[in-house]
Length: 119
Image (cartoon, rainbow, N blue to C red):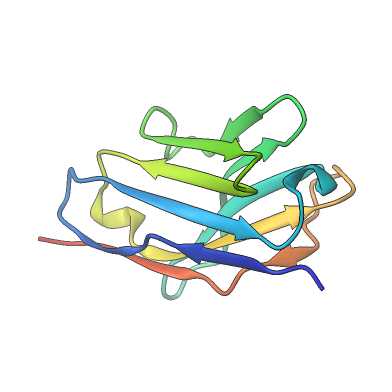
């Protein structure tokens, strides 16, 4: 049973920063891709960022390019999402996900962590 556990969410003022963590119950190299999604109230879930584990190649949604950075740490088996210059529209529940096929689909999901950007 694969477990993904997110942490690091919270309340932050506009312009602030947060770092989300996603700890996995197995080696991150057992996955082809890991990513972060978010879902705001009344909106569909959207892909924020993903990373190809071998090689560390990242991909970002246009709305977060230049502000968010995804990274992975092998000894810790953790994927991070550094979020800077946060905006109110970044408010959402953020989910970590992992895929084993590398075809854009994700097989495992975390429980989500709330990020609220508000003054």
